[in-house]
Image (tube, rainbow, N blue to C red; front, top):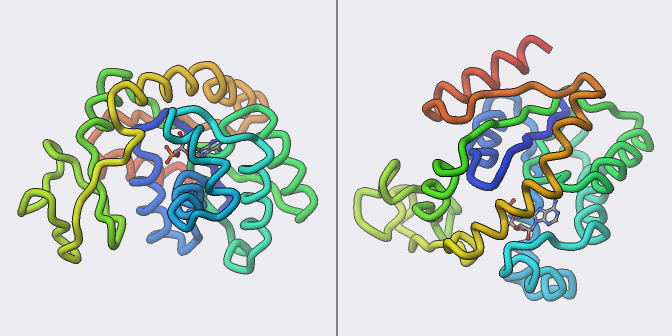
Length: 215
Ligand code: AMP
């Protein structure tokens, strides 16, 4: 299964990717997670990416295309993969097509999670994650048993810097201008599957798994 999860920030791409990882045993490739790891490790790439990420802007196509192309060649992607947060621009989509054709692979589906903007902002501002195991929570919809502490590992919960309201507005704007056109791009190639991302998490997962099992 070779899959793209498309949708605005807060649509639930990461949450759904985790479920698909479990069902299909294929890796989740999250460019956001890889870039955050590079920022934390202060690699040259991380240092270049940090400013754009803090502002809610996109990191350059060259950087993300490079990391995804390299990642797709690793052995665990043989059986398939879930791209989460990539592509985000038309040049990234073109570069992905080129990389995959070089590897003799084709995408199976592009699943687009549709969520209203007001719900996205509410989801993002309340989102928290564990510093140690990365488990996600939401202060209202999925709170931890003890405030600020991860139920799974006892690690400290934190709010991503780019989940502040001002930065969220930029990220939404960037999504509408640069990423939303990818829906038409993949609709034209017959790969686009639209899912109601406003439904409860388990119901969204069911919709996604039904689509993937039918492929
Ligand atoms: P995410 O975790 O997917 O919301 O990504 C967090 C941030 O990482 C984004 O706001 C961008 O600054 C950067 N980023 C992640 N994926 C990409 C991408 N495909 N292209 C450009 N920037 C990206």
